[in-house]
Image (cartoon, rainbow, N blue to C red; front, side, top):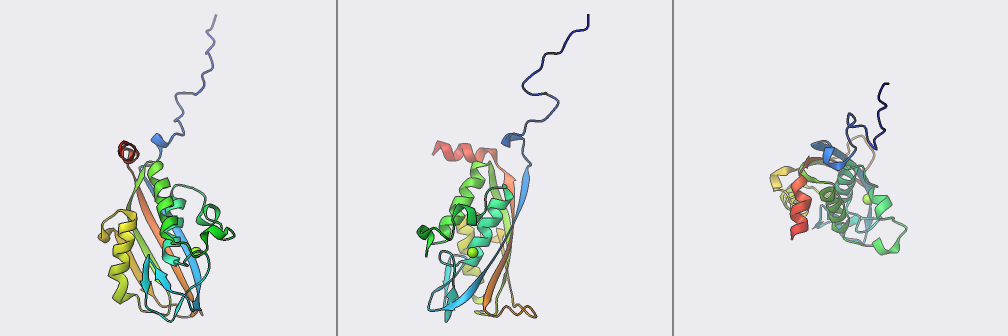
Length: 188
Ligand code: MG
């Protein structure tokens, strides 16, 4: 009589969909745009820049930190910045956008990953980013816990795009599997 194979809870020939079996690298992409408005400070990449206008909208309007946050969240397929920190919630009015980035980074670490590097393009007419690029890269690197040479930043003018009153940020991040990251953090 042929033996009948007992059903198991999981067929061993199929890999488990566990975090431990996840990819060794993950890529994330983030985009954001904010409109310039008079009478508010301009914050980009966690740095306050001298300018006659700031970026309005959700929180402190830091277009670069928002795009980085979404890139981090996207890389681990987590809910996006708008879902985690709804603009309709008065709690986030004028909030320091570093709070959003830190939450996204925590989720990345909890998923067993660390940031390898990131690259950003900022698109805006003014102010000129060049003189403050090192300060912005240094601050972003500090927030991400990576060396400054792992943070790329290019500033472009929106030629032909009719975006003179808007700042736009595009960001890509690369994550690496660091299964020890979570354990190391738990031991602290
Ligand atoms: Mg935003």
